[in-house]
Length: 253
Figure (cartoon, rainbow, N blue to C red):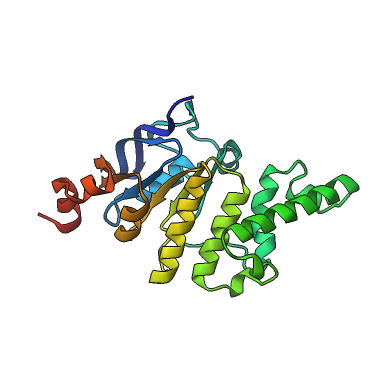
């Protein structure tokens, strides 16, 4: 099995005349935390949207576990074992916290969300298991006591934890975090960093897009720096912090 869990080879995305991702090459080693950083507009979220099938590449190859996943629908990418969170939290506000996590778990069920609602005996049994699994993931992120609460009533920090629990319920091998610390206070950011490290300890590969440099430097094994859609640096957190190209990209000449 390849040491690289994810590989982007000459990946390119053009919107009209704007090159958002410019012949990008990036590899992510299995079982690590890789952070992708860069100034606003560098193309970081676009990269996630390409990996997960929300956008189609203009060129290049996306490989997951050694096979190309270019152009697959998002639900097919998710079924392969790739889950994600979003920069702007996306939860089902009218559902309970538990029901939100159950939605993620249904991807791995035999019945699926619609068929299970018909509730023949086999599906009722499976639905009970899905509920138990969802409770497990809520406990993992520290939200077991919130299971019956309306998801829309949660503060932002809890919504981000809920979104993470839902992603974990999909049983991913690769989890993409898009700015998980955005809008969080210092205490919540520390808790999010601890959670991401716990996820890595479970053997799940993590790719992180984040602007909070303290969080990035604390938890990352490797940091890749993107500017104007191009890869300008890669290394350990310590190496990247002193790279002159990185300093120029963030601070100007």
